[in-house]
Length: 105
Image (cartoon, rainbow, N blue to C red; front, side, top):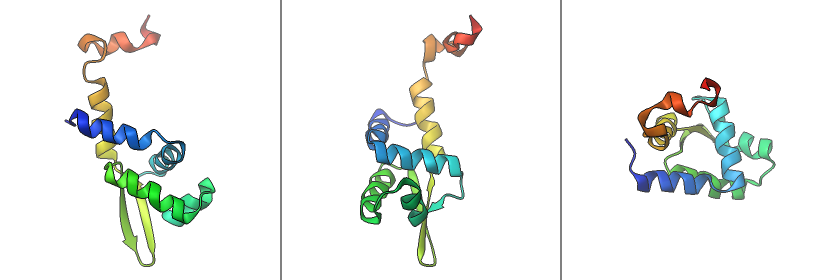
């Protein structure tokens, strides 16, 4: 289970429009991830700016990078994402998750 300091760090990293867009794109791509240059092209962000954002997301544990030849591929860290969601919903509706679903009323 994540500690509150880790969750705050992750949420803080996501509290910026470009980083949130990067993260959502990488989550959409799945475990194989995407080359850094492709992410920059897709989001129309300069490579230098992307480097800064990748570093912030990596430092928060939200993404992982891997070198493949000349390219760096980034992927969402799904373990951290799921741990963060579990932390945020741990005591949802007083321990009764069914009560949190508005479709059950």
